[in-house]
Image 1 (cartoon, rainbow, N blue to C red):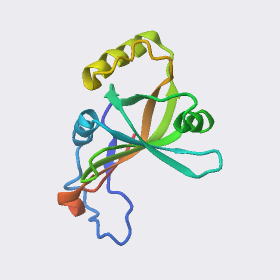
Image 2: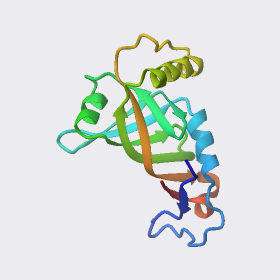
Image 3: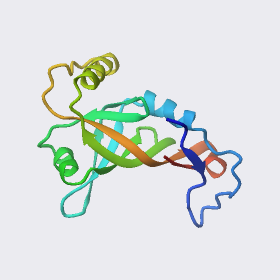
Image 4: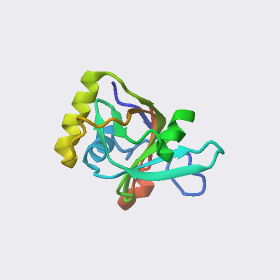
Length: 157
């Protein structure tokens, strides 16, 4: 995948410059997506109200992989509406991605996920029977608190 297109986010009233100088590179976001230990997922309940929860996951090959119980609130929400938001744990160096999640069934991908998950979290997923999802971003935001005004970035995939 080539790097997503970087532009300024639409943030009226914040004084964000229009110039492209200072935009965060996609590599900045990928570093945070790989290093984050905890992530936030926001899904949509059947009545349209939001639901956010902390999850563990992995950024692999330009996508985010995670697991959740099929009967959990997250799992039930995703079964009805695959649109969701994934965000890294550090708000002062935030990466927020909007996209869709879908369960995966490919055994090779599941084995890779289990191996890398074990390495990162010391948690054996090889016999886990709940769904593993792949989240593919459509747009995203990078917000670096120390240089917020000059670096606020929106990525379009």
